[in-house]
Length: 99
Length: 400
Image (cartoon, rainbow over all chains, first blue to last red; front, side):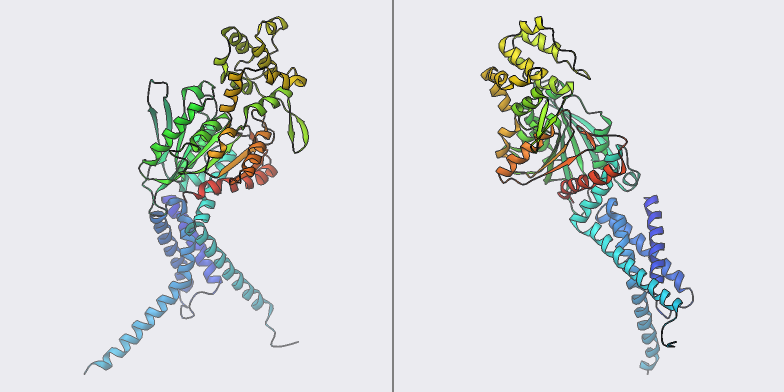
């Protein structure tokens, strides 16, 4: 499992790098954005691998890690941005609601 | 110069971006297909199994990603006439939620005790690593190089055991067989108790009809698609053909035929004329058929055989029961097989086509009868490897 996890880390890094090259990184992520994409790739690949192991078995975990990592680097930055935007507007509008 | 035209570094950068996007889409589709779809999972399994088969050794990625394997040896009905030896290789982990129950494969190796043959052990371990329960079936008769219809019962017993085996999906059990183990597999697949549950039958180097096999042995030629080719049997072929019907000969004939067709690497010299003269007419006819020294008298020698022998040939021929088999059949055969001629597979394929029975036939050049040859060329690995991958994927799709 350790070797597989290491493989998924490498896979995640590669997919994160591809996501950087594909310009999937949000424009607002200027400082450390590239590293964040690599981190997201690794995180998604690891989660995908472990999920694949649990649901489909270790044999198909790497393929699962692959597509979940791609989905992760494509969707997670947007979700994070949406979340940040929501939090920002929510926190900014909250003082106005106070009497 | 047009000032609006993008500069070369910009265009290159844009191209790189598009290439990266395309690569991500391809990875997404490939990963999704290989893990989410049964066909993809079967392909993954086949692709991991193929190198293990071609190299006849453990494939490192399969060992890393596959399940740990548990082995146990069971004996059913010990010390009786119907003893069945089962070598069970299974994953040591519980089955994953998807697809749920595991696939089980009943292996019927050919004549002899093949339980410790490295390529069979490697196949069984590799299948178990892939999450499949693999059972090698052996019987005293097969260990003794005898083919008998009763051996089909051993396969039925193994099949029924797997139907209740923990973790196995009873609808995902198939049978693969090698060489003369084919009869047991066909008999089991035609058995009313299990014939509707057998999901596939895989036959590697199997025979079809004893009489037509005898004709090829007797003439030392086979007719492949209208072309007559020389064919020389190995000693084991003659030995099994004799052993399987030896009880129908007189003790005197048995003694001489045993001497003429021993279990050796190569066929011994023919019996001296004086000893051939001591054989009964039936014994002499059978001797000449196996020895191949009267290729012009094959019909006469076949006609001289006793009715009991002819009836036994019919019983021992999978062709006689093929119409009762329900499962789709995968025929695999090496074109240069010197134990069971390739024409046996062609004959079965023709019979299945006449019956409109689902089947496929793949011809190879990488096997030495039922074992993968060593030192294969890249061309052989690519050509036959692709065909073998197709067959493996079909077999592995059942439990994927």
